[in-house]
Image 1 (cartoon, rainbow, N blue to C red):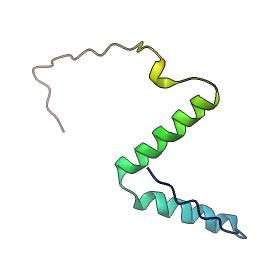
Image 2 (image 1 turned 45 degrees about the horizontal axis):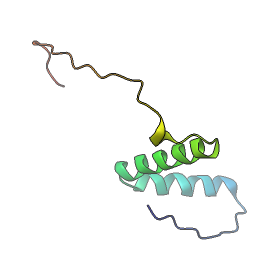
Image 3 (image 1 turned 60 degrees about the horizontal axis):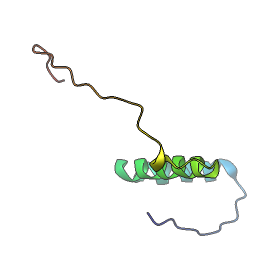
Image 4 (image 1 turned 90 degrees about the vertical axis):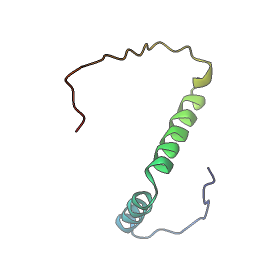
Length: 71
């Protein structure tokens, strides 16, 4: 994911916040999720934790429900 690293002078913080919200709302869901994953990984790496090296402590179980209908 490439990030535009343009420096801008901000005088109205509310307008800047609204511009940021408009930008992220215009992006596809997959791109927003990828950005969140990148931020989370960066935060863990800054604490010295590599998420790729951690063992999985979760077990997934699929339960069949015969009379269940999707909405």
